Amino acid sequence: MATSHPEPRWPASLALVSCVILYAVLPGRLVVGPKWLLPVLVALPLAPLSARRHRHPDEAPWIRRVVLTLITIVTVANVTSVALLVDRLLSSNVSQGTQLIYSAVAIWLTNVIIYGVWFWEIDRGGPHKRAGPEDLWPDIQFPQMENPDLVPADWRPHFFDYLYTSFANGTSFAPADAMPLTLRIKVLFASESAVSLVAIVVVGARAINILR
Image (cartoon, rainbow, N blue to C red; front, side):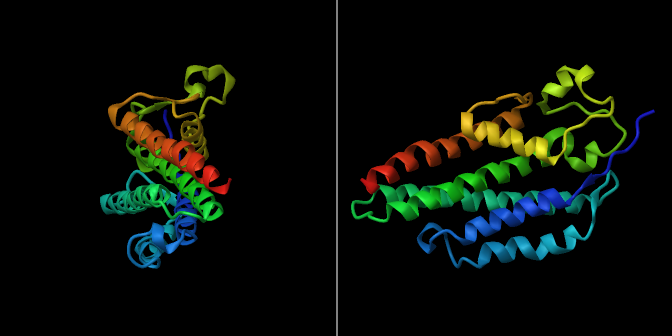
């Protein structure tokens, strides 16, 4: 008989806090509005949510809606920073190449972290659904699922598996070991790769050229 596997909430909460910190260190010209706005928008609902230690199948529906809203806010803010950074790099009077490189690194790290949270929250309906006894259809196929003899019988992906998947996709611009199976996950994989491509190739090349 299948058993429930409650998933801890703290890794995703810590990931969102890390994204906010990385956003806060960006130059003011790469953010829209006051720099304190995003930390406040994320911290206010995240604080009470983090008091709940685990995600459970019987959690209230509004909890997931709030989490998805927080992830969306951070994602939109990061994509906006990418656009502003590219615009800054294409201007004719750019001279602060070192600062731009640091900004590109912060944006790329935020991209990897936030999409790791996206994968964790979307796969099989979210961590609260995966914590239940029901065997759900996966959105992401991990190698352990193809080779069950190499892992414990009760193995299931956790947050850091999704974070590693995001890191691999953000560096190779394509799925590495874990494969997207559903349309929604393929859209997330593609959008993460697009932002990473801009941050690594376009921004990196332009910023290094400025340093010469």
